[in-house]
Length: 359
Image (cartoon, rainbow, N blue to C red; front, top):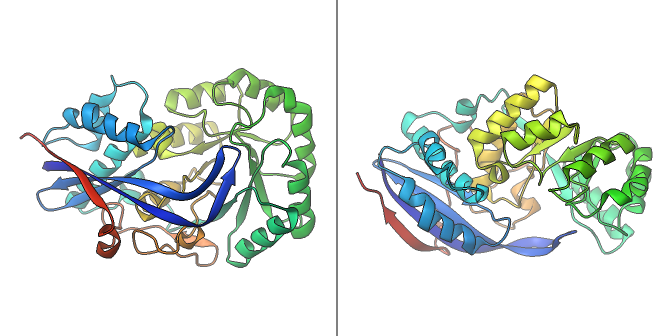
C-alpha cells in the first residue's frame, strides 16, 4: 500500500560543461520523488522541459491528490489523464510508483517491461566544443573508454565541418549521428543535405518540435534518416509522425512521453512498423539511468542510445556507478529499478515535502 509521497531536492555538478544549441549546463538541479509503502520505497527522477519548480507545483497541487493507498502506476496514469501536458511530472510519479509496486512484487522493471537483453550498448553524446582539435580529443577519449556510438551536438555554424573532421579522423566504421535540438528551419534543408555525404545513422530533431510539416519536407529532401525526439510526446504523436513520414527513426525518452508505460507502447508501435528506436538521455543520475536501461533492453531498441557510464557526467553518482564493460552497460535485474540512492549522497539532499496518502 502507498503511504506517502516525498519530494527530495539537491544538486550535482557535471564533470565538464555540456553545450548544446539550447545552452551550456555545468550542473543539474535535481528533484526526486519517493513513493513510500508499507515495506518498500520506490524512486523516480524528475526532469523539466521548462523549470523544475513547475514540476514541484504540478506534482504537489495536481498529481498527488490523484493518489490513493491502493494506487498503482497504471491507475495513476489513468486518473492523471485529464491533466493535460506536464509529461515529465507525470513520468516521475509513475516511475516512483512502478519502482515501489515492482519491489513489492519482487520483480525487476526490466522483466515487467519485457526486456530481452542483459546489457545495452552504450553511446555517448558529445557537446559542442571550443575547437575542432578539442572535438577530436574528446571523441577519441570516449572511444578509448569503450563507447560504441558517438552523437555530435550541432547548431548553425557548427555542423558540417564538425562531422567532416570526425569522419576523417576516426573513419567510416564509427557509428556516428548528430543532434540539432531543433536549431534549424526547413529553409536549411539544402545546407543539411550536405550531411548525406557522411553516412550518418541519423539526424535527431533538426527542426522545432511543432514543425511536423517541415520535418516531412526535410525527410523528402535528404537521405540521412530523420529522427524525432522533442516532437514525440505520446503514442499519438509518434503514430502521426510515422503515418506522415516525418521521420524514420524515433528517440524514446520516458520523461518526455509521460513515463515508462507510454514509452513501452511507443516501442511496441515502432516494432509493429519496423521502425528502429533508441533511448535518449537527459543527464540522468543513477535513478533515471537504471530505469532507462530496463527500457533500452527491449527488443525494438536496435540502435545504441545515450545511456552512458556514470563517469561521463558525474565524478560520483547518486547511486552505485554504472560502468562500461565491452562497450555495454549491464541492465539491473533484481527488484524494481534495481538501485537506490546512496545514504551518504542523499545526506546532501533535503526532503522538501511529505504528502500522507489517505487510506
